[in-house]
Image 1 (cartoon, helix red, strand yellow):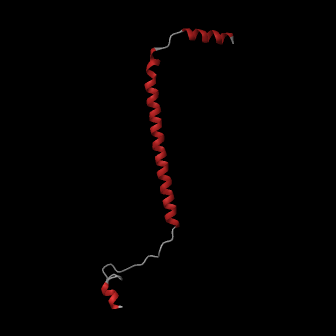
Image 2 (tube, one colour):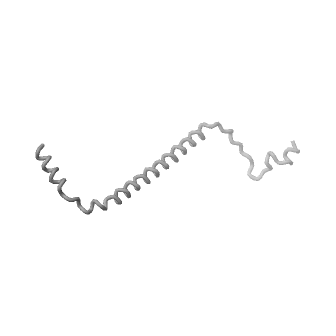
Image 3 (spheres, rainbow, N blue to C red):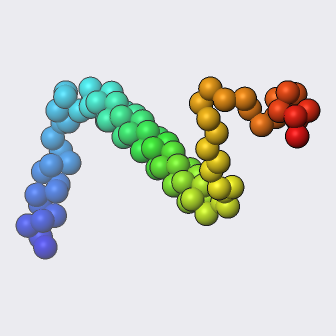
Length: 85
């Protein structure tokens, strides 16, 4: 334990390297990049959840059966068709 105290005492007496003064900007840029990535990931997860919810709700909703009509025929709601019946 005395050796550790002597080593730490020797380190405490030394001056700090000059590169430590410029490390703040790099750390802050790294934190900002991580924050941006987290926000982007959160947005993608939210979009995925909404899409899944809409897909499940759309598949469970009851739908009316499809009715085929002639392509160029008279529509069933046309006035001439209503007067003829």
